[in-house]
Length: 59
Image (cartoon, rainbow, N blue to C red):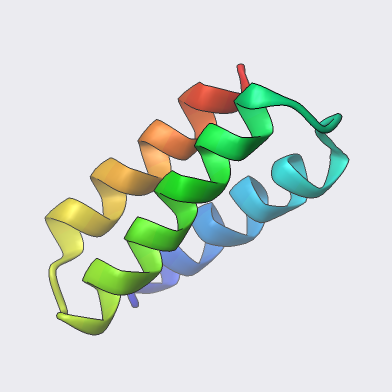
């Protein structure tokens, strides 16, 4: 992961940890897990897309 992705991931995870349980948190977790999966495939574009979707799901 790039330093920018690491920072984004840390911010998203912190927001996810603070979020109350419910459908938004569940949706964010699915996106976060998908981001981790595509990151192992070295696909930065999809990783960023999933991290953005996770952040959006918590909004």
